[in-house]
Picture: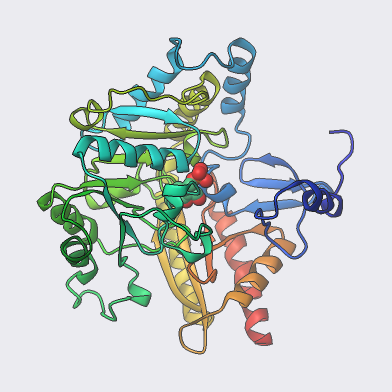
Amino acid sequence: MDQFWGPEEIIKKKREYIIPCLYHFYEEPMQIVRGERQYLFDHQGKRYLDFFAGVSVINAGHCHPEITRRICEQVKTLQHVCNIYLTQPMVELAEKLAGITPGRLQKSFFCNSGTEANEGAILLAKIATGRSELLALQDGLTGRTYLTMSMTGLRFWRTDTTPAGGISFVPNAYCYRCSLNLTYPSCDLACAEAVRQVIETSTSGQVAALLAEPIQGNGGIITPPPEYFPRVKEILDEYGALLIIDEVQTGFGRTGKWFAIEHWGVEPDIMTMAKALGNGTPIGAFISRPEIADKYTRPGASTLGGNPVSMTAGLATLEVIEKEGLTENAATLGTYLREKLLELKEKHPLIGDVRGIGLMQGAELVKNGKQPAAAETDRVLERMKNRGILIGKNGRSRNVLAFQPPLVITRDNVDEMIQNLDEVLGEVEGES
Ligand SMILES: Cc1ncc(COP(=O)(O)O)c(C=O)c1O
């Protein structure tokens, strides 16, 4: 690009030409023009340490040279033919996914986004069970199409006022704000037991599937206790309902394992993936074991799903994650980051809760007891950005700081972020 327009001009053009549902972070946003490993650069050359990775996408780091090289090579050789023709990268990636996903998950379908992956997984569950009713978790984000938005348990993301029917919501394992007003572990996992109650009271009993994120990202890095998913799976099995696990945000090393659900030893019936699989290239996929997958025989397609460029990006990303030990780095530095955030929690009353696994951590900001501190969250985000550090924000009340950096970060990066956060929290607390 010869000349950068700068943020003001981009905002002006956005107002003129982009549908206004698309918001951006920050009161004073910057124009981002370049990325390199864990760093982003604005149009004036200012460097930012990225602790959000484009919402859990850039696991292997920005513009990784090896991934970029392989994508460019593929673009120059064969970009697209549609999956009505035979190409090799799609089956290579499918074979690779079968190798790294839990248990018997083996057969994949490729599409272009997390939303599409979830939509497709739900269709597969309906076909395989011959049932149509669905369960979803409160505070979950499933996607932005009609059905996936209807399965989203966050009002913020439920724009459609005439949602699809046949969906029942189950309380999630949000221990910091338990909707059943109980305390773990004396609750005996009442939220998991609620799956049974909801099936018994709010459905015909013929439920196709429950769709759940293993750690709820947009919900505010809500991390269930270890017994939660094993118990939920048992209950679903009793009723012949499938478990669809949405690893769109948690997948590909982020939590210190390939997939977050592995932390609890549960084998999903169907699993969905997107985001980090392409390290920035549009991609989505769902995978299931043959007994389920093989029931989907009527025509299914996606014009760009399985295209050679995204598939090559996926293969290259998985190889880089393995070669560079990024999953191990996520486990080690995730533990370190968590310790440091817990230290800040002791010092700063604004932090009410710290939760997450690996390099997917959240800090819920509160005031006057447990009242969500949303305005303070925005101030923290803005000031961290001014100091050259980008962190994320999510949660039911938009009051949870999200730390989901590229998995290539270093211990020094964690220290730098924590030191700045410590100072910024102090400033914001001083003003409240
Ligand atoms: C857990 C989860 N599922 C699904 C989606 C939807 O993915 P996409 O934006 O790629 O359609 C998201 C996106 O934020 C997500 O976090």
